[in-house]
Image (cartoon, rainbow, N blue to C red; front, side, top):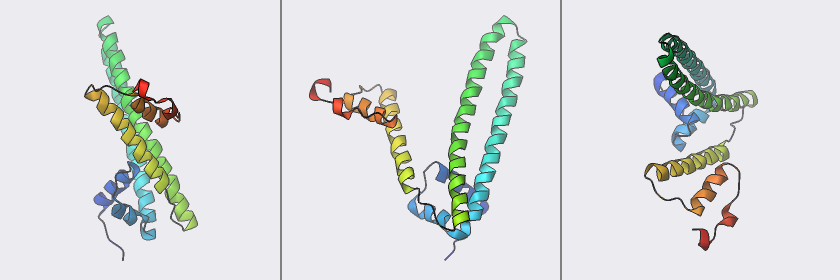
Length: 171
């Protein structure tokens, strides 16, 4: 039985799916073949929105650079700091856009083949990677002492296996 979802809710589902924040029931709604075209359109709209955001940030960066640099020497530092912040925002949006494009590729494959692509393994890996990163950030945020086990876990995110180096002496 098909469940009708309004456009705003569906767009939110599409965005949350890219972030791996959907429940299994919500994910099953997207995976229904009758929703694949709508899913694709939602991803395309999301990419368009992200491009618009990036363009807006670039315009703001240019305007701020011009304004700060017109202030002379004192504005140079402000221009540099603002440029760094704008680049950070653009990088963050670009990173999300990468995942949106990856999901779009999966949905396009589903549409072309008529078969649902199971990305559960990648979704789970992404979930666990995010959990490890959050663990690291929380330890630092609350100024807790890291252990060799923590460092081995963080190294695993970067593809390095350091658990064999963990022993009682370096805990």
